[in-house]
Image (cartoon, rainbow, N blue to C red):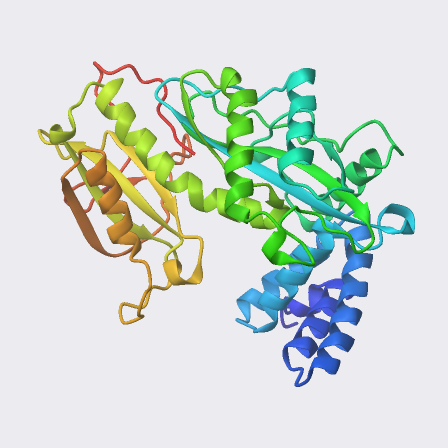
Length: 400
């Protein structure tokens, strides 16, 4: 008997999502777009409202494998339908948007847990209302800052967060969404802390202050960002002693998490280089760095291995994820495309490391079978398990 194909083992819901997304990708007019998008939106609402299953993710896996143009369409609409409700909970005459405000943090010491006191939470809600949100917005925030590993891991879970927090904002419930159990490594030196909440406004009203019928009269996003960052510094910096912080503007949930992914990469690399030169007491002139691309078919991440001038043994490593198609499949002839290699090397030089070697080829994604640590390149191109010299205090040794 021939093996079953992957598509034949998909649920009916996943198959429906694939068919509708492909139909929308073939649309040739605005009216047809509206028709297919409405059908796909209804199918997504049913899938996201189910108690269990990963029908949306399964459909996306198939479309990605097939390199279908429908993949981007389904991703975009799944994000929109999971982070927003129109109408609001229980068909109320309101709009809801799940938002997030990332706090990028790095330190030479140890990151805090991200707990918020009641006074801090009230201050942040007031700050949101005064500097970011529209005049008729109501908001409910999670009571603590959460890291990547506690954020929703599926579109269904994101939808559940949106629904639950919206009900809290409307006074329909007092509890928030259940957070997944996850212990953040105590030895991280750079990570993102997310302030997550749901904003509810009357149907058609502005969610953010930069939305206005008269755009010239509205504050710019840059001005909102500055006011938000200044207020957050007053409220949060006492809880992040010894940390360098960067406050990103509150945005729609998926937009803000992508911005956080982008923003934490240079801070992670900077934290690694800084820790080696301060806590480990290795001058930048004695450090060398090797860069290599890793992945299966395309670049999935860049790995940076640190060695000393006296040895080719890898003492430390840092991962730089490839977050876009341009980074995973760079085109050397593309005009205006940012060169990731150059960006990493420039940052290392800013940190005082001048001996940098770019290694050719695409290395497999290798990890230690015992502890799960990624392997990193040395100056000769060998992938090694990072090992700090015995005389160096090994805490902390891992980065986000």
